[in-house]
Image (cartoon, rainbow, N blue to C red; front, side, top):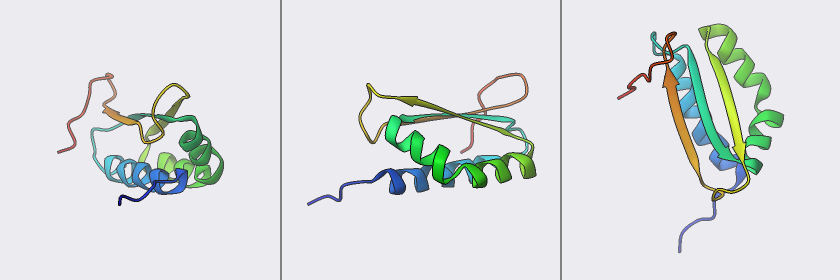
Length: 89
């Protein structure tokens, strides 16, 4: 039987992606789309960490929340200064 993910466990996945992308020199902006509950957790419980990452790496982290998606929904886009997608692989 599979494990049920929580807002906390999903936010950990998001934070790992953010930290990884923040270290990429071309990335200046990250757009993350998640379910409302995950976004609320990130904005309330991880805001200080996100601000620190933004300040230390000169990047912007934008969290877009949606209620009409599955709880585990997440899209992640890293962009350069011109708004072009940066391939992180």
